[in-house]
Image 1 (spheres, rainbow, N blue to C red):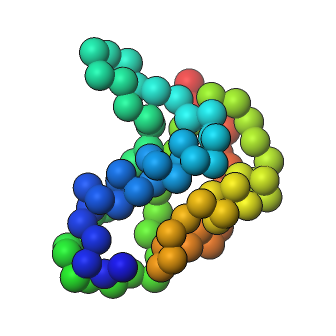
Image 2 (cartoon, rainbow, N blue to C red):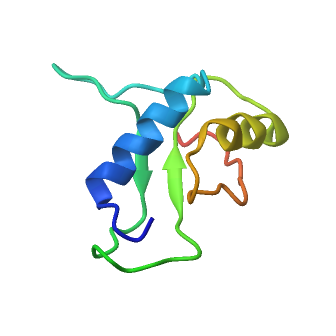
Image 3 (cartoon, rainbow, N blue to C red):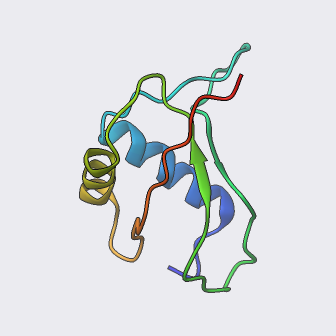
Length: 90
């Protein structure tokens, strides 16, 4: 999976969240999108063992359930290793 671009990875995460039926919050505006972001974009062809991202959920889900649902829909080569649940930002 080193030849997947940042935009392709974002599309992959969006599809995975929808397939896992996660209650992801939507952005406001004319063209709402799922609130999913990655901390940094990797260059094409660069491998990584640990990338951080953020998914904003509309309702609370247990971390084990969330991890299981995401792992079940991820393609070969992409693995969710850990989930840290954060409290809602106000």
